[in-house]
Image 1: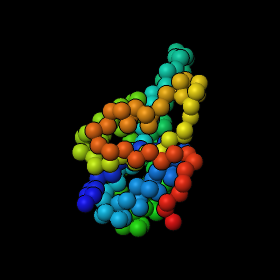
Image 2: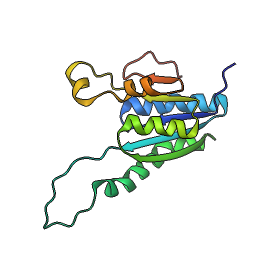
Image 3: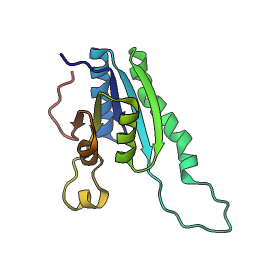
Image 4: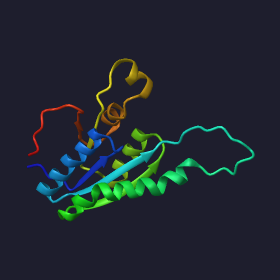
Length: 150
């Protein structure tokens, strides 16, 4: 028998990650599990202009991202699923793995854009790194897939 209590669902607000959240919601409802919805803000290098006061872009983004996450999970919460929001700063796959270990997550459900070739080389693959380093099962929801949620 499969027993899932804790689901980690990293999101980047893209259609594949929103679809992964749908899957996480269905699993959580079926197994009475908690979902941790996580968004990672990756720090961007910037050039400094000494004439302008420096405000790290992460500070400005944090509140907006929290509001976007709250809006995204509002419907899930209304369906009775227990949801926790986590916002992290850093390299996405590393933050996801750290959160999964911290919470002893049972399964990670994440979306992938399905990039290949040069775009994958340039942008990297968060999903691939999560799969390689996770100590729990990982369900990857592809950008185009056979739908099994009705």
